Amino acid sequence: MASRLRVIPAVIALSASALLLSACVPTETTPSASPTSTASPTATDSTSTPTASAEPTKTAAPAPEATPVDIDCTALITPQQMYDFNPNYLLLNGFTPDAGSVAETAVQSKGTVCRWENGTSGITIDVSVVQPDTSAISALTSNAGASTDSFAGYFASEGRTGIAQVFTGPYWVTLSSQEFSRAGDAKALVSLVTAALK
Image 1 (cartoon, rainbow, N blue to C red):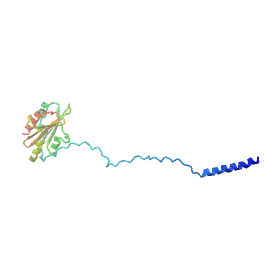
Image 2 (cartoon, rainbow, N blue to C red; image 1 turned 30 degrees about the vertical axis):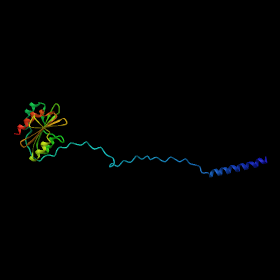
Image 3 (cartoon, rainbow, N blue to C red; image 1 turned 60 degrees about the vertical axis):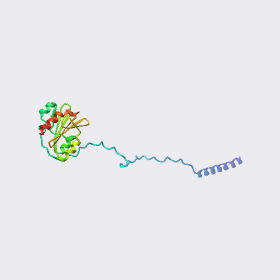
């Protein structure tokens, strides 16, 4: 019995020593995951990112130097004459010519510009008369399109729009419309306008 009692303190002493030693051993800690950034990505510099460019817009040819023209639209083509051509067309009191059109160039050149509109289809016929400086005639003629046998002038198409151009006396006359798929379609109205200018 006495020998057992002597063993117990020895066991307790050994256990205590083991506990003390284990307390000195550094324990490995599991490295925590590095924090992830929750910030949204910064915007790229606008100068380094190409942006889509707008569709190129059509611009009118530079307006030639011209003498102002003050001729009433109904003097160029009377309402009765247009009715005979097509009864659906009516003269508009005011309008803004399409960008890049010969009518826009005529407005910039202080010419007379008229628009007739088909009340059924919405198709328009623009008629313009400009008195350009004589030095501009050559450039205007070279850009007028192909000469035609339908009338003493030129005809060209831009998209679905046919453009008739005539140079008579001091005047540059244009008629443009989707109604004109060929030069012959504009012949009757060209004749009326040129006759009115004589």
